[in-house]
Image 1 (tube, rainbow, N blue to C red):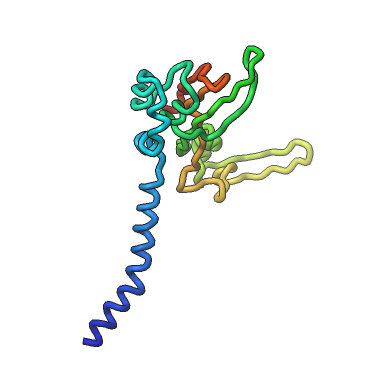
Image 2 (image 1 turned 90 degrees about the horizontal axis):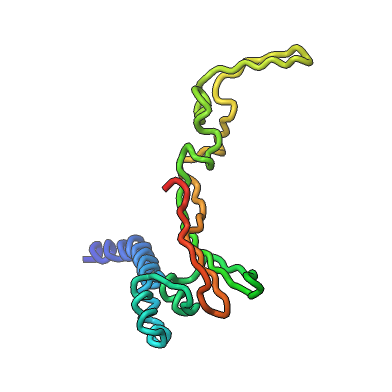
Length: 183
């Protein structure tokens, strides 16, 4: 019987603590994620103060010109960045919403990709360089642009703005849906 108690005790100490920690982290992420439904249910007073037309738009995650900042926040959530400016002599505030995407291989984010045979980030190809001033020349094998610290198996993440909204006097003056590159 003491061996069984020792085995259960070992399991509880070594396996259950990391498992409980992982489950707690997942639960925290799921409950703290900002979603449209969460914003509406947690801020029912703001939602109820909106006109019926705006309530219907907010439920669909849409906005319109003239809508209040609170209604936009309910519909779109918190912006990634806020900027101030001026339009037609009036102070403005713009909200920028950003999505994080992985940079595709062969794009501008991988400038050494696609220079031809041997110039694709691996070893291959032959090059010959002759210097006129000193009369020296050398031959290289492999990719002259190869940098083992530049290339990664994990594509870099880039932030791309995908929508903006500009307010004047607390009301939507204009908004845009931006088309990200490579879509």
